[in-house]
Image 1 (cartoon, rainbow, N blue to C red):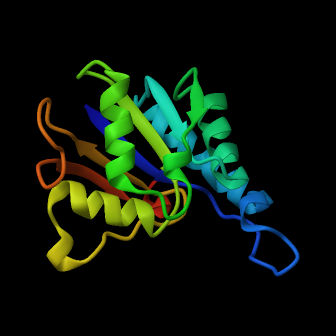
Image 2 (cartoon, helix red, strand yellow; image 1 turned 90 degrees about the vertical axis):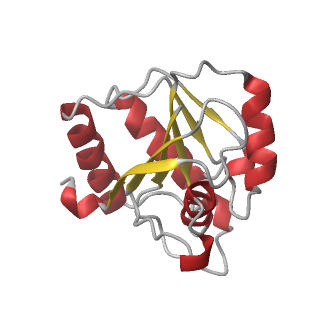
Image 3 (cartoon, one colour; image 1 turned 120 degrees about the vertical axis):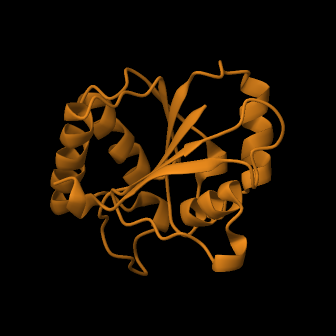
Length: 163
């Protein structure tokens, strides 16, 4: 399985009067995410499915990826919300019985995605990887057994190298 971890684009600032789950992408965040998506498309990248956090900024990022024809479908996963649990998500993923050849994009948040990538490649001793907004990490997960500590990273790109 090819797993692509994608951080949502630039979002509105946190304020005491706006719940975190309702923060949306800024105009700049939408524009940069569209530019990244356009570049990914030009590189020939396509996803069989996009899973996204239920938070507004992640859903908007997933919608931009679909509008850019990187995938024809997306769905929400509560496991991808901030402070989501990788073990619970991996259990859920295993139950889905996706084909081994699937290219799956996951749109979520930091520090989760960086921590998850580090756990998947067995890099916890060095700390988590940092994923910039609208950045991407590509991982190959093994066909059998737990992917924790057994996955391979093949891509880590901040958005500035894609736009």
